Length: 216
Ligand code: SF4
Image (cartoon, rainbow, N blue to C red; front, side, top):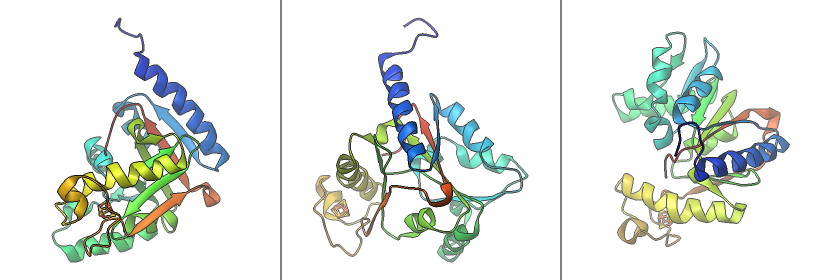
């Protein structure tokens, strides 16, 4: 492929992103498409004004893209990173402080082509902050998280993202054993809260779509 010529996948991602952005705007969310992770990290950083307090939910996307370090290198931000917390008590404090931050970053478990965002949570801290508290929520979403419909997005979250996350945290759930969701009620279930964001009150949610695969 000649330099500067888009691959079929890149062309598809760009066209699909255009459609999703239009649908997100209809849902009162500002949205952007960045073809590469490098551009996406720059965009996320630009969306966070100097002087902001910022934290994030557990997200492989945010970590794998190297966003925490970029934000920490900006000395004007107050960054709360639970990975730096020395103990569980400090982690809980960061969860609590998340509700009063200026910016909360999160990925998602899935997004439908018409812009419904689906997240599944074990503790609930992430979906709680997405729902209420931080002045602004920025979602960073690899195009691998796009599903055709809301139903397909839910199915993706339950049958792909959650079993992988159960393995990632080595949690004793049925899906950790065979990779399939059993709709369990296990004490360690990571699927206690299922959250749909279908419209952004006060437009506090912003989406950055990334033309690369990130997260599960
Ligand atoms: S088996 Fe339980 S923990 Fe695993 S994905 Fe299904 S509901 Fe979630």
